[in-house]
Amino acid sequence: MSRLTDLSGGVTELLTAVMEALDIPLPSNDEDDEDAYHGILDERVAGVRIAVSVLLEGPGLWFLEDTARYIRERTAQHPVTYTPFRFTKTEGEG
Image 1: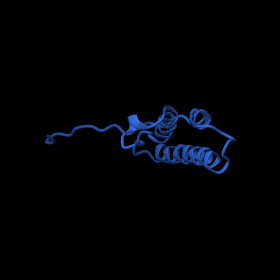
Image 2: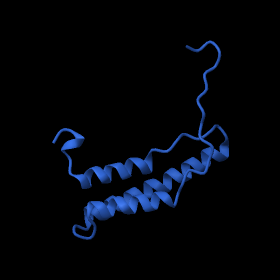
Image 3: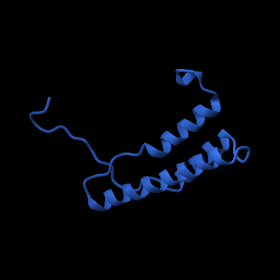
């Protein structure tokens, strides 16, 4: 196995759920937005850690699909509520 397409559907689903949980936009420069960003990211990381820990330490308790579903449900409980950073081109930049 050397490519994502070589992985089973369950593994691909789990990895996709992890990426969806952790790939959130950077916050604006506003301090409240930065605080919200860190809070949301901390909650989502905790959810991923819990799910993967249960999967690894409790064989037979959860399957890959259950783990991916838990991560997605936990992610939905912590939506992005802050203003994302907007990249703008300034004069003189190419």
